[in-house]
Image 1 (tube, rainbow, N blue to C red):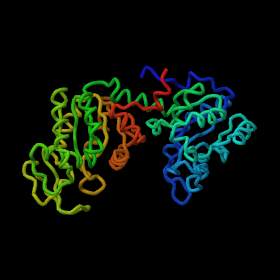
Image 2 (cartoon, rainbow, N blue to C red):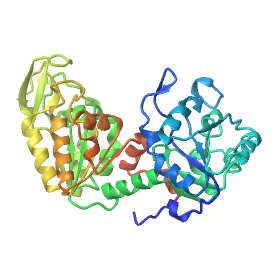
Image 3 (cartoon, one colour):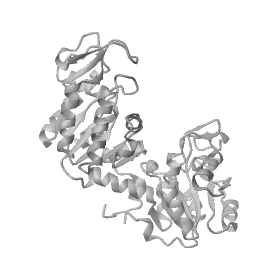
Image 4 (tube, rainbow, N blue to C red):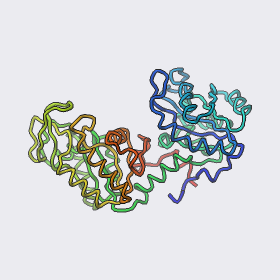
Length: 400
């Protein structure tokens, strides 16, 4: 990104109290963290702070306590997972966000190189309101600020936006890696660029599709949302998932793509079933002859071939959303074939591949290639808003 945002090497961390905005909003069951991926991604930044005898003071939201103290959403339950990931003791500070004097005493009296977790920032209504007074109280606990939570960067909250203006601030190593990967995906990509967008509904991805057709050379549309486009073009799609009221929107996107010279790749054949369940009987149809009682649940082999050929011509692939009902066999075939092909081209150095979104990450893991992409974003909403071309307040606050 020719770092248009401030990075860690621009901060003096020596002996400093470092407020580290983390994303500790991790899945917890029976008081235990069930997926520590987001915690693991923080480790390089924490190590960097401790290397300079700084104190790492972690700030994060957790769940939706709606601005009130709610023990169910206390970050104390996440501390053992941070201990496990860092291999060091971690102190939990039961923070009162109306009066942080006791928290300050706890931090200041601790040794250099200590790690602390503060209480859920959303236990105060000022967090989601981006309240400058709350941000000032937060700032009083540290000397410098690092944001390493790209997944929360699309929210203008006190701990992600207001706080960044009150202390010397920079992106952490995980956020820097994410921003550089995204820049390689859509900011200043190697062309041609192919975007793959799937998932169930057009309605949740209108802004995304409209942004992409002006940015990429080819746009592959799959999953349930492809049915809406096929319907808009006059094809019968039987009982397939479809948002018929969005036919006009789909047509508008197709027209915009024609104007911007973006090739739209829609399915030409489909795997059809009559029951929405795994290993149910299926038949292959061309999209011009779908059985009126059937449901399209995956793209067919000719569609897959067409997509693989587009990927062969590409230097960059950006992916959000599966192209079929990949959670059920055999409707995972299209998504898996594309994932393996993208991974192979990436491995051979012929492709920069950036993927993100919950379903996409799950689909890549299912195909066994999650670690073979150039970059996989676990940022959910922030990744989607970045793909839509929106300004992310948490990133803007770190601009030089």
